[in-house]
Image 1: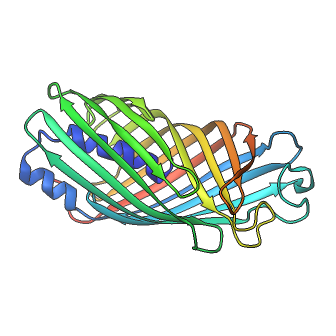
Image 2: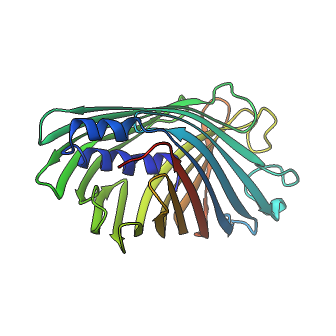
Length: 295
């Protein structure tokens, strides 16, 4: 899963945990952690061609629940590029992409029932040059806790970029997301997942999320010099998280993409074409190290 996707789950869990004591909650919020994540999507054909692409991603981040920094790298392996509906037919359309991001969460507990959270992400997503690659994500919602197990969230998610801005509603229901036994659930848009604790250390889960990102292409891109590519998709996952101790967590997931779309823009931010990529299987592994103890 992508950073933005996981941030949605993180803040929903944070909201459902607002019944914890002030001291305990603050300790968890400021506890720093480092995570490394690697994923792979298998070869999948591009629409109206025999060309196809494999994608791998690596992410390194350091953060707590209030602030964080991250770097993400995507690597593309293309096949039969001469048949692709974009590019010049001889050069690799995209080799690597990069994202640098600063994330800030601003939680506010109103009372025992109401909780507000605004999450801001400033980022640069680019192929080679940083110029005109900057964007921002704003995720804001209000959470109402019905009781110890159940809560509801409503708000909005906005992805801003000079080329294209996307606004999505955030509507969800959360069940037992702060517990470490039995079932837990987040049901809504853009993120839904179901989890079950096999024991206190092991969580099995299934989920799906919608994501969107805009990338600034290089000044010599064969797709569109100094242009942009917008990627949109639904990603499903099934996997397990295992907590070795209070400091180390390991996760593994099988991935499956649904309805992947690539939209191309020229340097003037005018859309030039749109293509789909077939569904693909993949895998994801993640290691998280938290400093200190969460006891």
